[in-house]
Image (cartoon, rainbow, N blue to C red; front, side, top):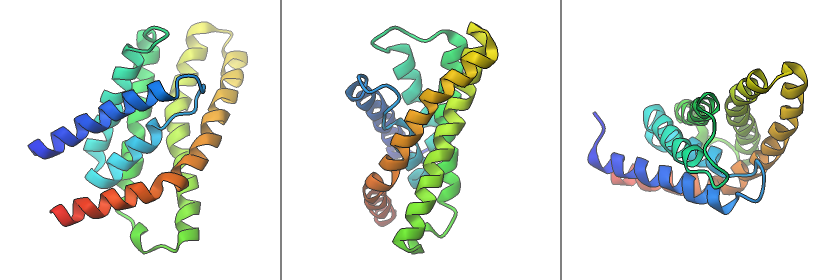
Length: 174
């Protein structure tokens, strides 16, 4: 059962996704969504991480400044963003606090890549399926995935000290 305090944290992180997305709206495919969802999964577990990703992306894709996404794309975005919570939750089960900074940075680059690919692969697939011709549309969509991948590979290691601090604060609280 989810505690009241955890529900409020999930709500705050989901709202954070929406607000931070507004802040990066003019930087196509550069955003902090993946990092926030990954952090929620790492700190609170898979289910809270998935909820943060699903609610946060659901808000963003529904109330996007350029209009809401089509339902199939919206569903793919929500599922894809939620995958970062799974990645973070699984990473929490490793010995990440004991890793050397270099090893942790390498792992964070790989985790950023996984979160990005798990989100954009279904979105790109659905987009290509809807708007045809499939392969040209899918391949051209991968360029946008590349932008997000490059930004996340930088964002995850740079902002991870914030995650580590939140993790330590949550452990002390329990």
